Image (spheres, rainbow, N blue to C red):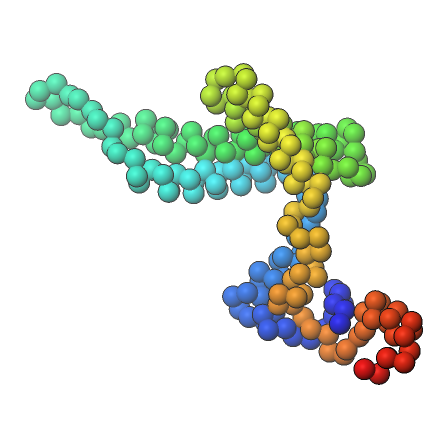
Length: 204
């Protein structure tokens, strides 16, 4: 039984209010990011800020309050701005800087060397290398930054070359897991070829 984007019918999970949106979005993931460079960089910055906020919400509550010493008899209000700057602003800036670096370098390489997007994995590798250098630069060590750039570039390039999915045919997998079933049975090309090759068994 073949399944393609034109299949009609209802599968067990397709109209499920919880799993339906997941299945539909899984089949609609783009292989290459769209939009101009400014749009990509802006989207990356927003995603970086979002992940930075999430990181802060998870990590900051577990951090102890800083120890502060005041002279005897002196009452001084705590400076919460310094705590906010170190606990919230820095991680948000780090996540956004890494994301913007990747998006900007990838889009620039695409515009300069591959406008037709024939080999986008090299663009992703370049963006990953630049983003890895930024991450490694936070350690203030050039060897660490260089290694981080090569490792991250290889990872992002390989991810782009293999695709955004861990399976070769994401649409087919989504249809198998919980997509739309065809309203009428249709033979696959392989089964039709076997019936032509062995006509005596076509009615089995």
